[in-house]
Length: 282
Image (tube, rainbow, N blue to C red; front, side, top):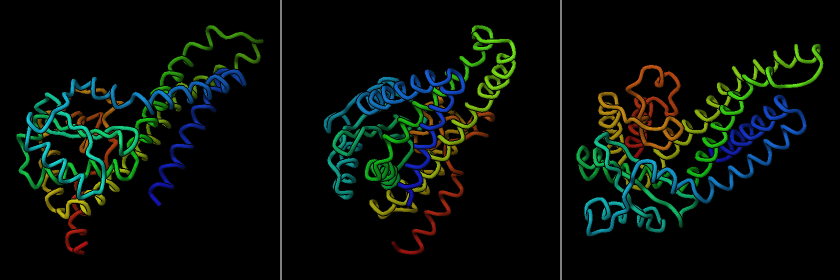
């Protein structure tokens, strides 16, 4: 059911993108938006993992570089029945982690130096199980493409601010066009953000559940989430907001405005669900 919801939300986001193109530029704008969506989707499919890893200066490691992290990821991948992903360390003291890649055979997991220093082995194993849960559920690519299109919608909305000054047409038409373009400029980014949030939030619950099933350590994952949340409140990561949804906890949670539009469900709710899983003995 979660996969169906995600697919529907993704379709809505793409349709929204094309519709905005139509409102801004008519049939030609819709066609341009459709072509742009295809190009972005293909680019996100092939290069999104490389781009995000380079953004955070992540360094690929071998077992010799960090036996603890590499060994935990290998063990969790075996438990999940997944190919061994590439393993990266992000040189950042804020504790967090994310996964990326277009499919299980081309996946990567990344952990910050801060998370390695903060968590014990059970908690780190549970976090890696969560990240490989995203891989197993095949929702990493969807969220990456959603973020790409959401960013493009925001860009088109920005351009809509200037269209009334450069557009042609009769004066009567321009009056209506100005109103439409102003509405697009104001409402489009909000709609894109809300849809992206919905995709990101529901997939976090799914990855928590899958991760708990893989590791058989729902309480360890809950403990890790609590630690990570508290530390990110104290020292949020200075990152690109467009990639915030990729992390296991919101890296912007220390910023009051950003927390109002969090791409993650409340940590308290996630921990409560994990406690339910632990009691049910699944």
